[in-house]
Length: 263
Image (cartoon, rainbow, N blue to C red; front, side, top):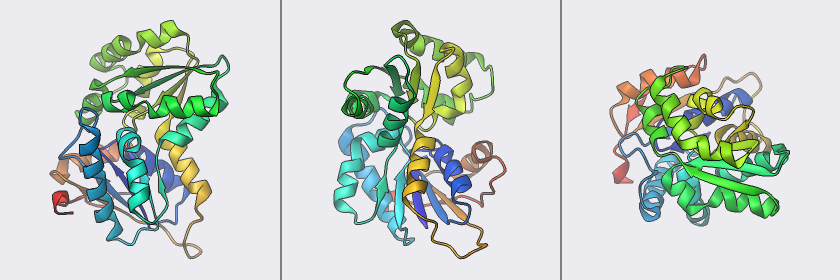
């Protein structure tokens, strides 16, 4: 079993990729819907939240975990790897590697929550891999709210306006590749692409799922079909309806509430 967690719904984009790559694997997902968004919180708070979630997930006997959240990966991943003795993957390394492979003109953009951009982990990793790349980073704090509140329909005028407002500096910078540094963002990739025509979008969740699946073999019997269990820190009903949009044809059972502060 593999554990996946995010501040809310966004990590479902990574979970969907993992379920397709590893169809026989069992997954447990935790969405911290009662404390979303993480992007405006301090690093210390995010580390505390992430440790609570990891202790909860370890109760299922997971063999690996994916921190499917750009903010938690930026703030908490080193601490989690020191404290917990199992493979823990984040979204930064894989997305940075994909961006370096993809860019043709050496100009890469990164978007994320305010905390993600302030910590600068994506830009730092990209420049570790290739110091010649020019990285332009922009915080897009409203994007998580738009996704969590359902402003995700193609052509939604509110989301299109927010994307244009946030992303026009990246268009001016001449980037040809954009890292979606929050796993919520692929859900509004249409609006992002409309503001940045011709720019290749890198989903940090997909890149992380590819890296995890390449690193781990499915621990399954032949013909086994994997299961997914979902837990949230707020009422499950709104999560369940939104999750169906994220997961498509991949079946999800009913989400369960957990008081994560007990962990």
